[in-house]
Length: 130
Image 1 (cartoon, rainbow, N blue to C red):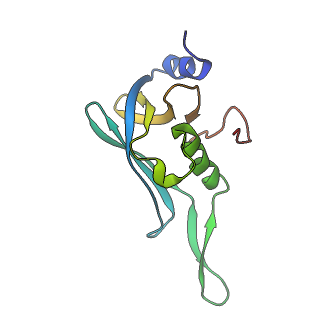
Image 2: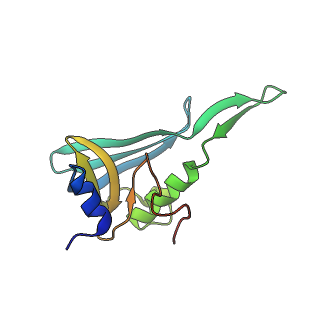
């Protein structure tokens, strides 16, 4: 028996693939972003490129980041999905990749019905459940 969210993805024309997180980066070269590289049976695929905000300058000319309020939520949710307490522990953790064609649309916990979809990070609730 499939879980409710898994069934929703399948009804939407998606299929699930087992994957391993190959690498996980948070970068701020120009714009703060999160990228995950997932290793699928046929090769690596990047899931991410989510922008958290953009650089700005205060009245003194010092740079700061004005961010998207869900940025931290996405970071926490990815750690929750992988079952880790530190971002650096993400590599080599198993996950499920929700695929639509050859594109990853969401990443899920290997066994539980917990998913991260950047377009709707917490469509089940506005709060993070530990």
